[in-house]
Length: 413
Ligand SMILES: Cc1cc2nc3c(=O)[nH]c(=O)nc-3n(C[C@H](O)[C@H](O)[C@H](O)COP(=O)(O)OP(=O)(O)OC[C@H]3O[C@@H](n4cnc5c(N)ncnc54)[C@H](O)[C@@H]3O)c2cc1C
Image (tube, rainbow, N blue to C red; front, side):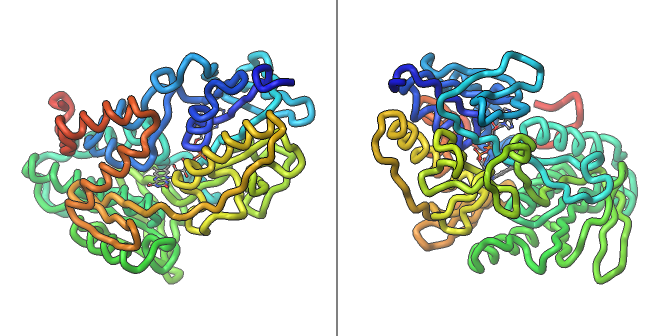
């Protein structure tokens, strides 16, 4: 088999899979399989919710990103037969054979077995989730008459966010700012109520003290109610029940959003590969799986031995691994020595409401409106392809990045 004949199949078109495909284009026959027709720049899904960015900015279609030398299959993989070297599809389409496989299917929301959570809460991982949540916020606002007393308004406009990791705090501050703005525009009495519920004793547990101070300050400024050492015990169609110090409280809510955890994709759960206790595929420092040298795994589904621990489960890690994966697939096919690499933190940037952010770069943390601008600049540079970066950068520079208010149905702009 020569480089030119080899069929390289990449399953998953997120940070790991898409960036590997872009690097591998022109090497052998490359096929990218994804269950979506677009890439998603997840770190800005919060800005999509608030209308600070548009769908095409953060969710470009693969066909606009990939050259013709990458074959694209828009389908859901149900199973991978590692011995027969076959990828199988959910809809029964003919299985696809590979010489080299790259598994980059990422994670799914982990409801941790909480009763009613999967059925009644909204996950926050996809464009459709953000659309559903925004719609739920507009619907709830539209049902509140302007003369309703403040306590009734607050009951009708209560929203719960489960988990106070980076995702939970970015989302809750964004929702709270949007709702506060809508209250002013619609001249409603009182205030909305946004609660973030966290099992641990602090918000953003994986982050340093300095950035946490900015986060806590933003939660206060956005009037988000923080409940630490509190568990969500069930979610119902009209709210959820939380438990603190053994005492349970039922809370009525217009929506409960689940950002409480991630587990590996079901495709990975079925794979007969060596894994750790969290179900992550154990990979060598070359990103090869242990028992199948022609199979590579990266991103959220892989446990990589040589990375700063805080990088686990981040786009930063998947993005950096993509370069290593592409280089090593080329080396594997040409019989060269495969490389290993140590991955470091590239800096953190959290969006805090619609006005502010906090950025940790070069060992220094800064916050406020300037950090918000810096975050936009940083993320422009991490978007896929030069062409897309230029188009989006120009759109943000000339068109601005102001949020889109939660206007009544019928006058949405
Ligand atoms: C809302 C949100 C915000 C985030 N913010 C940040 C941040 O600020 N910074 C940061 O570093 N990380 C952030 N993350 C984490 C980051 O998104 C992930 O770590 C990263 O996307 C992992 O890359 P991946 O390639 O492993 O998986 P993903 O990017 O999730 O890609 C998986 C791909 O596989 C496809 N797929 C899944 N199953 C199948 C199947 N069966 N068949 C075919 N295709 C399939 C999916 O559609 C997707 O295209 C955020 C995550 C979320 C959800």
